[in-house]
Length: 493
Image (tube, rainbow, N blue to C red; front, side, top):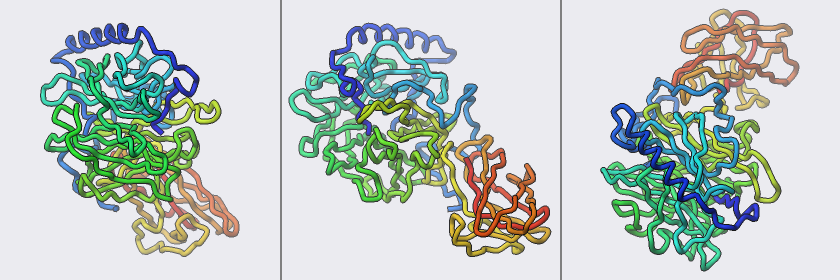
């Protein structure tokens, strides 16, 4: 969960010292550097807040990832399944200010709110010295400052707004506080007074997340923290984002298809719909995962996807316990920022690092780089020479074939969240007794000859080929060269 409390988990409870002074120096340096950039007039607002086989019309605001958009230049060695911050950096959120990216995370042994910076979402990321949060408010105590959310300045205010969850001094619950800074590097200074959100009847609140509607109305999402009644809520805020401005609305709760509970909300509008990302499960277990729900109205009702967007299984173990996802939007498109488990220390104590992956949209359906997506062959376009064959052992219960004559062809539309090289795994069977071959092509460009090795009885095999795909929809094709066989699925990663 966005709970992380490494100070509490590792038995460190002493207040951090020296962070305010160091952070102030860092903030001054950042502001001076930004002012020296060509054409810079101070930090530019980022796009962080407000954060089917035929493509559907896209909403006008906020801008979705355009099909065919260029992907950002990435540093050598970057991979969507490798952490960009490989030490402790849990519950990350990222914004862009001027030409720099800023990441904020749950407390660790060095800071109440650690901060890191990078020239691009993919990195390289550098941890900033000191503490991004100057101090905690009077109602809060050290050790459990989790899941920050930073909102860039709005309408010329010049103020960056930070939402965070912290432990309340007078009872064992978490509440949400708010702080401000003139610099994205901090230090953020808490707003005096009681917590911004603290529903004691629901066990408190954690995981704040900002959403700004197209008319400028500000909202805050959060998770009610009682284990049995954990749910995602939406509450309106005042124009400056510093006070609650109406009653909270319950959006979704936990159901039996999800592990344990729901938390870590993040809301965007894409494809004319509201898309609510959230996590399910315990943050320290391998079944922690990212899911999403879609609604036509901000207030709901929200329809949950039956499958997780991210899970350990979806990544085939390459990322463990992916969750606490946050959407970052910039001129290159959308990116999903999230954490994954790097190391288990026993019990609920785990190290979690930060990951970044390109995020694309098929209307309001999110598609993420790094997560394999399977397309059943029987749902592709058949040219009459091949037909759908009922095969209970196949992944979708059917396959296509037998590719036994010249001209036999299969076209499968597939969606890529970003342009680039992809691995395409093809499931097949070939019971002809000898190798068969299909010509594989992507968007009409022949790429390779795909060999179907002989298989026995009810066995199915698979092999991978490489393809260059455009951002958005593509067509992968298989055409007979010789022999015969059956195709089960195409899976891109």
